[in-house]
Amino acid sequence: MRVLRDAWDHLLAASSWTGEGGMLELLGQQLLLTATALLLALLVGLPVALGLGHLGRGGFLAVNVSNVGRAVPTFALLALLVTLDWPGTDSFGPYGRAGIATLLALTLFALPPIITNGYVAVREVPGDVTEAATGMGMTGAQRFWRVELPLALPLVLSGVRLALVQVWATATIAALVAGPGLGRVITDGFYRSQYGQGIAGAVVVALVALVLELLAATLQRLVARDRRDPVATVSTGHHPAG
Amino acid sequence: MRVTVLGVAASAPAVEPSCYSRLTNEWFCLDYVSDRREEILDAASEHLLITVLAVGLGVVIAVPLALLARRLPRLESTVLGLSTGLYTVPSIALFPLLVPFTGLTMTTVVIGLALYALTVLVRAFLEGLRAVPAEVRESARGLGYGAGRMLVRIELPLALPVVMAGLRVATVSTVALTTVGSLVSHGGLGNLIRDGVTTNFRAELLTAAVLCVVIAFALDALIVVAQRLLTPWTRVGGAH
Image 1 (cartoon, rainbow over the protein chains, first blue to last red):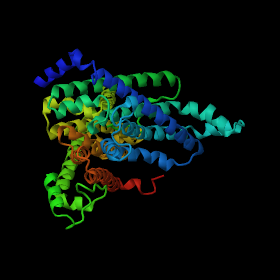
Image 2 (cartoon, one colour):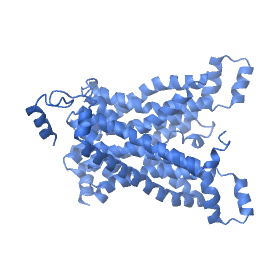
Image 3 (cartoon, helix red, strand yellow):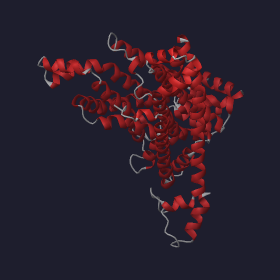
Image 4 (cartoon, chains in turn brown, blue):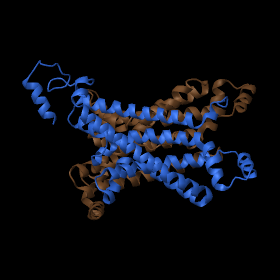
């Protein structure tokens, strides 16, 4: 159990948090990566998912993208991107070493839950409701914005929440291929046999993951209050993140 | 080990055109696969072993846990809350947290992955059991079925489709997550991926990555076939 004391000491030492390459800097870097990738995935995934759902097309693609996303190891995709001539390990602004490769992998792995949940959310709007909207003389666009989107929102948001968890996990794994972020504390610790440091890094990563999940859950509850019960539908696309 | 292989290739050039050497580093390379067949097979079998043990352990714990949770509603919300919290923790952070107890061993990876599989499987079992229609339960009770016999003969078979769907999700994601076990040197094909990326060896990296996906889809297909065999009634016109 000496490693546990080492980990505790590492967590309490100011020097492990501050300075260049300290945990605070890496934490900020990983949060920035997570936010950017999630935003990119939302910009790409939401229009596709909601549009397909509204048109009732491409269901096969929208549902199977999750199956493929689950089967491809995040670690393997990160490794491939880093080893390719582009994006490779080039530094990218505040995102650090292998920044583009990491961002790309993070965005790709955020897409499946967003697309699948978004599509299913719009498709699950009851048929009689959309029929009534059409009967009232709403155009397709009006029906989408005033009827389908509000009703679909809880499930769309639970997809975003799953994506957030996925992105945070993938961002941590980026360190296995010498990418940026907090995972560095873990991998450096393990590769240099300083297990206390590695475990300390794992504690920070796990705690921040839980905090992010709690924040997202609270946000979801605030937005989706008085709507459909989101708990009943949250299981769509639920799987260990990486 | 590779150094010696490369040495041979360099000292005897043009004897055998190889797609991996100090000069060429191709993504697709059958020579690599045949030269390193044993290493690849070892990694793949470790990968399979870890996956099967982890999912098996997950099932063994998930069944009694789900049955208990069904009886005690307060336990159910605790179990579901804990499993949501657990799946939030990235695998690369979970393995280090287990290391103080189980060391740098395969056990660490198996236990970590079993915990993830558990989060999916408990949910699937609970959902599957909940999907059994109340009138079916009632008629079984009317026919004189006791709790134990009802569970085995009526409820579990009817819950099977949902349970198997959960098992597919758990299995496929376990195959993918096993690669992260390379952090503690027991990642099956993940060890090859890590070696491939640190030494910039493209054939090794791609071969291992493709094999991971192949194993995932193969196990998935196997479960689908098993489900077809176990639930013949779902095919008899009842599909829709």
